[in-house]
Image 1 (spheres, helix red, strand yellow):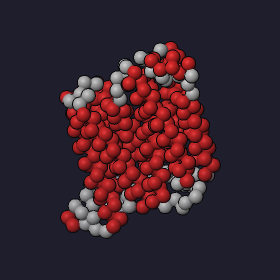
Image 2: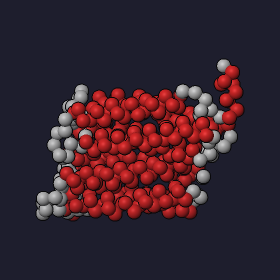
Image 3: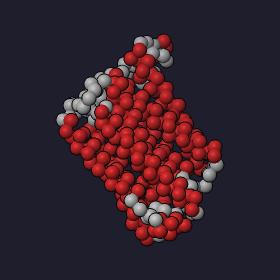
Image 4: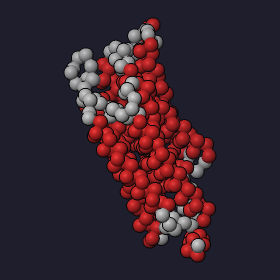
Length: 299
């Protein structure tokens, strides 16, 4: 794949990641309704600019959302015309198809909040976050496919193993740090703490999704022993991403305070899943390139 498209894919996914964090901060700061019911405009001069700091946060979030939407559209076009992997193109296209729903949910939470009781209801906010997470997941899948190398040759097999090791180790290291910023642990759940928590959570989510994509590609080309081991890592990474998603949704606290024990339990399950995946990746020669098996066995 062309280097320019690869960079575009990484930049698009990174921008979507930043947008999600802005959305979390906007909600945590309580700025979601400060621009009033003039969506997509605001409450300042000619309705185009913010009138105060809270409305600036909401206005800036909308501005970045608009820019991100156009960038995703451009990336989808490039996916069909600048590279040959149709899986990448379809993943971006599915993200594009979710954009109108995400935009509509954003509009509903603002324009109908004062008209219908369900306008800013927890269920609508939850769906708004789930759709955003689905868009991020699809773009992450496309990015993981774009940056992955062909699984042929000793050098590429070694690189594949290194990515799995470093990726899963990163999640294992970040998990206790993320736990410190979780609801009801060490810090008061302020907007700054929330955005830190979700920055770490979304980063781990992206790594787990990428590991799932890379291991799924490996299974179709590996020998039987490696396939069994990698299939387990694939299932563990998918399960980890699902558990982390559930934890992020619980910690939105949209239906009121949730007992910290719920999130703690999810953290424990996630830690166990990642720990087993790390053990599988490090345990022996199953992931070694063919030329390294003999050397490994002779030690």
